Image (cartoon, rainbow, N blue to C red; front, side, top):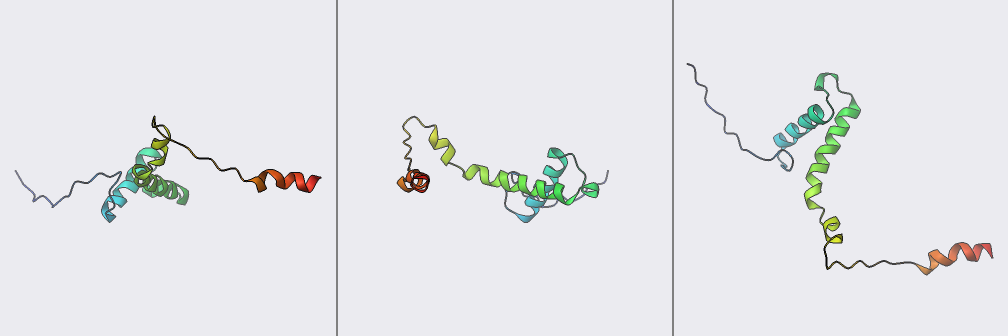
Length: 93
């Protein structure tokens, strides 16, 4: 039985990690599992989409605003500009 020494592997979530090696694994993972492409026959657009999915995975935990809209005590402030409302009517009249 031959044993090989284990590398010092740091386990990190491939969806949120920011290490260079983790980003490479995430792009390859998105290319293979989300798009069903192998790197050998993937187009530039396939690589672009894999990169976009990888960036999206890192941005999603930081988006707290959509959760706050559905909170029971949330208040939403809307702004409606008077210039926007009157502008087309002034030009027409």
